[in-house]
Image (cartoon, rainbow, N blue to C red; front, side, top):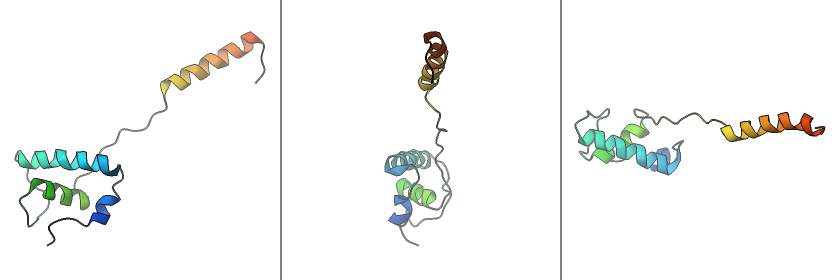
Length: 90
């Protein structure tokens, strides 16, 4: 069994390298604090275990849904209300 997951798998992480490093660090902390590993690895290093779990899809990041900025909606509404008052045509 290899010690580390293939770098190609981790390079394709959907959230990018920053999200991957945060996820791996958080999971490694959980393992260090006593959480049971979800994979069998020939290493006792919590970070190695965490990266293997991520590469095998056992641990996934949760990203917040993207939302349009509220300010753009407010400006659009105000503009739509102001146009008739100014006598402009769009």
